[in-house]
Length: 480
Ligand SMILES: NC(=O)C1=CN([C@@H]2O[C@H](COP(=O)(O)OP(=O)(O)OC[C@H]3O[C@@H](n4cnc5c(N)ncnc54)[C@H](O)[C@@H]3O)[C@@H](O)[C@H]2O)C=CC1
Ligand SMILES: C[N+](C)(C)CC(=O)CC(=O)[O-]
Image (tube, protein in one colour):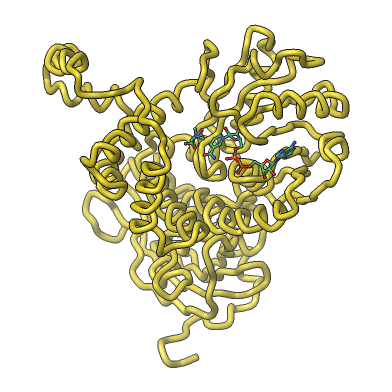
């Protein structure tokens, strides 16, 4: 059954939550008194549709239904999860929780996006304090997996576990903050860095652009994949963490940093920062900057996915939980996935090389189906592709769901002749015809496949013999 999320406050963060829930198949009901909220959420949703689905190598669930409500009670009534993302003012949040708890289901979870308040502060005077937890996200909520899940002693273990399960099911990484504290874990670091940066600008040491270069050209790249302590363990060399602390620990007491002092945010300082930021990034609109950020994040997360590391390992785990493709269809569906952002090129559509990648993935999947899997390959047999003919018939864009259907034209002896058709819905995008030869990985020469593979391939080839010969099979360049 489709689950329902209510989003209260549809600004920067509420819009991101709405997009994540929707794209993960939840129905989403939004309440925000801002008359511009619908436009803003739809724009954020457009960016999310372009970027999130391609992070998965299998198709995401069908999008849920999005509705906007003028009445908070109507929005929260049927919701399984209620996400509060109203402005960071305790009084406003308390007022919203009172209205929510008068109208919502008692078994619904109420998550707050608060960046700084402790759950016990949010729960003050609540009708059912145990229902409210902090679920602090990071912008853009539809791409970044981290959610700081902060309960107070008023929350029971079942609520915390249920919140963890739901967050995991929508592709998030819930980090359980075991002791509530102002600004949780991550915002403490962000604030420390931000304070230091404000001083560097005020003291005329660096501009906004120079500060950003100092981060993104160096330690920002390291932090994205190993964080702080694993990075510093390596920085200690073979002598490790103890040596690192002995060497650099004393510097922490030198008066370099001004961590707890905040420079007075005078009009002059604010203008200085804003005009430096305009000079640095004012040539792009916020939506353009979001798209640049998302394109970069997707490429980085997909790189980490290939390494099964950090945020990429979270993506792989989420994908492993999805059902495998159905093998009994005729022709066989061997790929079903969205086009990732980094598969598109300067022409604004999927690059020609990626058609072959999708067909290569289809072939790999078909090989697995006939028994040429990792164990078989480790035992010394495999298939090599000897010849390929691609036809690019129509364009396709980032975020679109493509499906590859595979037909066996010949499966006999050492030969496996496959014909792949790629579709978006009913639209034929491309075909790929491939001749593969079974090889011995020891001699690197053609060899007979195992009896099991020969039998399975023969069985599928016999079933596919009843299908009409595909249009374009056997075609050569210029003969269409
Ligand atoms: N902007 C950020 O980078 C992050 C913000 N947060 C947290 O998310 C929350 C929201 O922040 P933003 O989205 O940045 O603010 P925002 O100003 O972009 O959005 C707040 C939205 O709440 C709406 N609103 C005001 N009163 C309301 C009410 N009574 N009921 C429903 N909606 C109401 C406003 O119309 C506005 O659309 C805050 O608690 C903040 O600490 C968390 C992570 C990151
Ligand atoms: C600036 N901020 C405190 C609202 C930032 C966050 O809470 C998290 C983020 O996305 O950086």
